[in-house]
Length: 145
Image 1: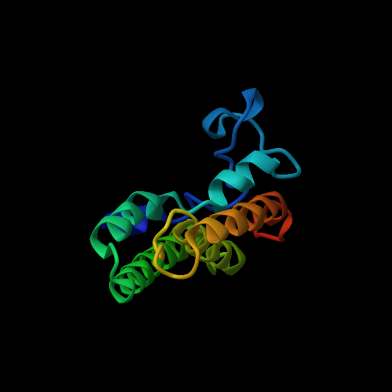
Image 2: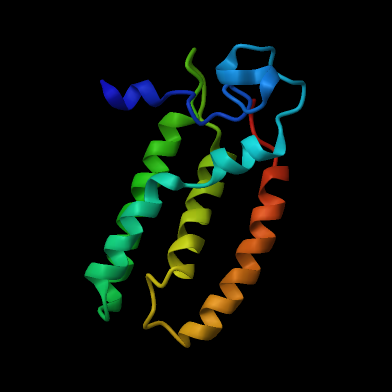
């Protein structure tokens, strides 16, 4: 099944990193996982495209926007649960799953999924600062290799 082919694909330090010494896992895995690899693998890109649906379909209906955002976040959670599970068995990287899910909610708020919730300008400004700090700090969280 296609869903189980995701196992290990988003696991930090799985050998599918960046750089000349680690092209598609052809070189040796570095001792420490590079910051850009952690940053890229912890961003929930699978939910980003669907969030435009929330903004478009939800429109001024806050309840519909919230429901759609929660459904997409649940999808991100499930995909990440399988994608961070080692290919040889074991447990999912729950730190990475949680970080990706929180990151998705932050992204959804920042692009206006809840545009009728409060002052949109103040929300965008505050989310810009919060996401900037989150993006810098999150790769330093402990994750399984």
